[in-house]
Image (tube, rainbow, N blue to C red; front, side):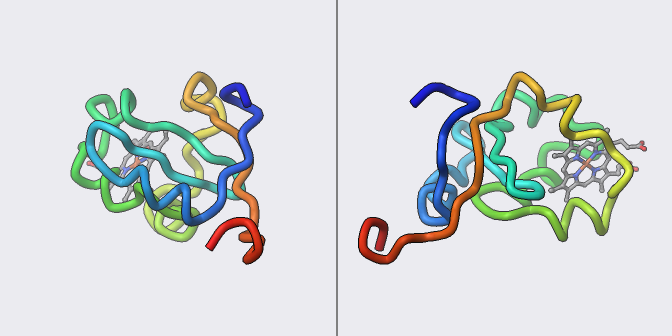
Length: 89
Ligand code: HEM
């Protein structure tokens, strides 16, 4: 599947929790933020707190008003899907 059309499970998302391989999800949308990390105005360390997981709550606690959909347009990978226990355990 191409970037922008991926279906990503929480398990797969959790594999990308490193500085050089950083994904996160906000409101069901999964982004590869690896290349955005150095540009995050709040610092790479702050953004790092949200990687490898659904960062919606964390994101909203800090800056719900930030237009992440526009800023991360080129980083969009696809949708966060729920786990099918028969396929992804
Ligand atoms: C600013 C944390 C994700 C975009 C900040 C600041 C913090 C922070 C603490 C404030 C810095 C300051 O005032 O000096 C976090 C955390 C994240 C996260 C914990 C984990 C999910 C994101 C994402 C984006 C983003 C995904 C969008 C691509 C921004 C922008 C600012 C900012 C644009 C500046 C906001 C402003 O000055 O009004 N972030 N951030 N952040 N962050 Fe994040």
